[in-house]
Length: 422
Image (tube, rainbow, N blue to C red; front, side, top):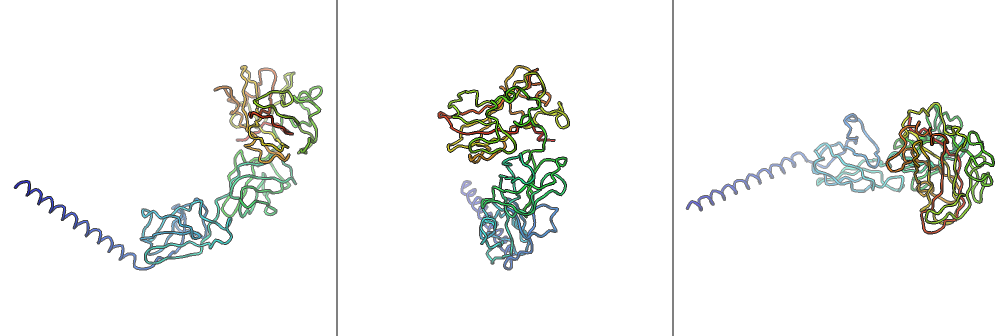
């Protein structure tokens, strides 16, 4: 009897709990019905930043999060931008606000000129539509093709979102270009003519501005600021040596042109050979920059203070390749002997920078701290200035890591040390 009694009590409790839950559900539905009395309306759109609470947007960019403000928004089932569904999280829906994130897959006018430029919100009572433009994000510069440019030269940038370009800014006060841009359909290249009046006391970075915003400036967006040259293969300077061997390459290979390659300015160091497979060696694929008399060949003075962290400096130079075969596996090794007898080096995969092998010039760059030997690396610029304790030396070596020789004409110019971080 006791067991039956407990069972009855338990069943009664379960029935009461179920009834109470049903009442709550019906109450909630009634409450939602009372609030959501008609079709939705959209009053305005703003960002989720509290400081923009009083703003009203007519466009947004891919990757952003927006707040849609209006009436009767509870129960929103979907939000569409240019007829593309964004997905709705009910946790971010109230009767007056819907918060959604604009994914990269939303079509924009940059890639499809026929998009409707609308924002549409749908719930069970109807839908609301407003005119609203979706734009690509702010432009991003990932690489300056050739940083060694002068006024009048064409400058090509690689990156993303080069759509609706308004202005390209160059170093200096009020030095910019507002027309004559050339970009491709994918928005990942931009070419512009370098203007007069560049002033490197204002920095050395290039910046692109579109309707979506401006690109960031960093060590990848710099152009040559006329400082830090070690070897331009025109003026001997501290590298002066009989028969040009201070350049570490035969004077016969220092010319204003090589087959399929024209110079940027003056002469450059050229190599025309089948670069040997499997890390094979020959002296003609080496540029050994040194003054064997112990003269300092590295830049000194303002911006090159010995106590500055080595991480603030890049070793840069231009390379052009003319070949009909793949350069995958072709590397440029930067080699440097330090004052403690360590041979520090870093290999740059050339295909990381060089996108065409038609003889056009590309800037290769490596941070100074990437030159290593095990865990040993340069800590300060002063460590770099010491060289091996007497001779100051920097070597560039073309390395072929593949199992087949690579026939190519290769040019190197303007080896320099750049203060990349102030």
